[in-house]
Length: 546
Ligand code: C2O
Image 1 (tube, helix red, strand yellow):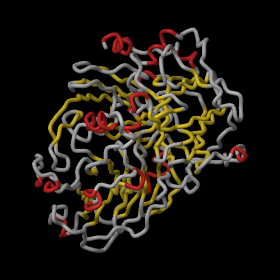
Image 2 (cartoon, rainbow, N blue to C red):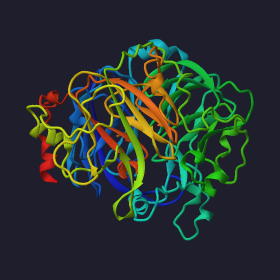
Image 3 (cartoon, rainbow, N blue to C red):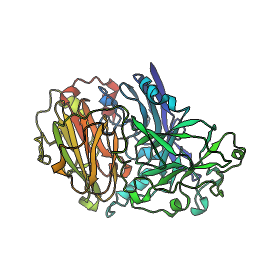
Image 4 (cartoon, helix red, strand yellow):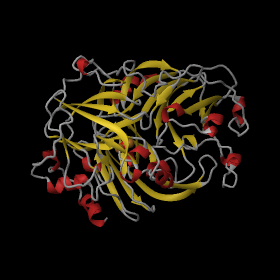
């Protein structure tokens, strides 16, 4: 089956929480439309950019096997779609299913509204968990800001600022939330439109909530008062059902949880998305005062006609008393999440270590670094360069010996000629390998790291230095697989993946500010295969016109 989506990007005025600002949106709506497919389908996504900035669309978590050039990463896998321009993404979705999302991968643009859910259905998933629920509901949770991200970004990257990220003004659940307009006198804020999202659910049914953190910065605790959450999926991997009360979700992670509407009461229930301020070292009195809430209302509840979501309402229900397992800003303990479909991680054949840090560089600007290199968009997309220049195979390499602790590696490789330490940090994996990548987080903040094109096994995470003496005895039987992992401040994670998907794949912190501060590196997998890609002519033309 081929499914066609037409997406037009433009700026509009909007007030998701009552506060009026400029949004960048898809088809005039925020959040963007749901994209759905069955495993194996072909998707044709026509993007028309009527916005004022460049854009690209990235389909987060998709393998794009053989279609790396459709991965949608600005100046890595493609050049930008200029204002007034268009581009068609055309790819198939074999070999994966579950909950994903799509977003602009140009600067911090997705924080302004270029985001939407992406769901892949499959028979296999249906056979395993389909009988466990009656209805399917997407729940997008995010932090929220009262102005265009480019303004906040300029402030964040200004000289003399030592990694002081913009503090969210609010958070949203499915694009809506309450905000008290009195807190921002003089602004255009429509109190009557500051309405929470209401989930009207039937009684005695089980709902699959697909919780997606589409925000730019904050890790979020998700919960529904009085309704335990049964976790069944994370990042497109089915999980042995496990019950919890609060679910910590970093930026870009997804979880499916089941809730059953079987509470005998006439209450309406808070649906909570608490921004875990501890994890991002900030406090905002607005958030402390109000939290971010939506409302669960049973459809047979006589109360449900009353506006429980009105501004003055006091809660009818109380938050779960227990804190998330996860106050250290880690993922749900990886040893407690067990994938339903058992996999065995093969032994690694290569090992790389990258140190992620923030450092004050030239002009007193604080940037993010992987092994001393801070990413900045190259003048043309790196994949286009590789495709054209390197078709016969890579011959020269700039090798450093950062990764020699355990195994001999080819080392990081810089493609092309770049100057300074703002550059492309690329690890070249010439052939099929089983890759171990150790990420040392040398920063005091936690970071959600995302690898494009793959799911990796989370072999281990911890604090302080990596226990080299224990390398080789990590559990290889059925560790959690995912595409985004949270690593706490001064912590590490050892990730393993089978490098069977050729292309240029970013590994980056998904905090939007940090990505733009350069906390991004790339894997170049089986470069010989890159020359054999068959991208459409329009792909190369994007670079010619910029
Ligand atoms: Cu959600 Cu580089 O992506």
